[in-house]
Amino acid sequence: MKNKISNRSNNMRAIRGKDTKMEIKVRKALWNQGYRFRKNDRTLYGSPDISFKKFKIVVFLDSCFWHGCPLHFKIPKTNTEFWHQKISRNIERDSEVKRHYLEEGWIILRFWEHEVKEDFDNVIRTIIYHIIQKRT
Image 1 (cartoon, rainbow, N blue to C red):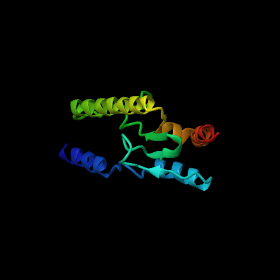
Image 2 (image 1 turned 30 degrees about the vertical axis):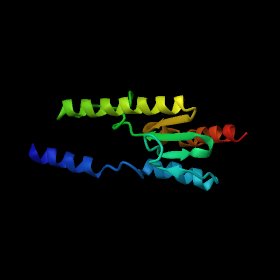
Image 3 (image 1 turned 45 degrees about the vertical axis):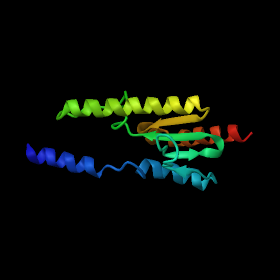
């Protein structure tokens, strides 16, 4: 049992908070189409994964596990109370961030990990659509 917990701890420790494969893929697609942005801008509330300050657009790419995806999140079988509190707080924080940007007149785009995997082109089109709308 101890080895199983140790493996889980090592797995969780290895998970990156930024520059995930998903983020890099989205950023590369936008960059290759000529769009310039900031990544993980700590001067903005919630450190959005991608931000376009000029257009007041922020993009968050949310992992199904860490952000409690209603379709895919499954609470781990061990340490359930800890995980319940952790994921609940992440969901609460996501709501606070959303409220902040809406009150400030920004466009906030949130995509689940499964959306990026299943319909990548639509994610990129949606981001570009909002940039084009702000340009005009």
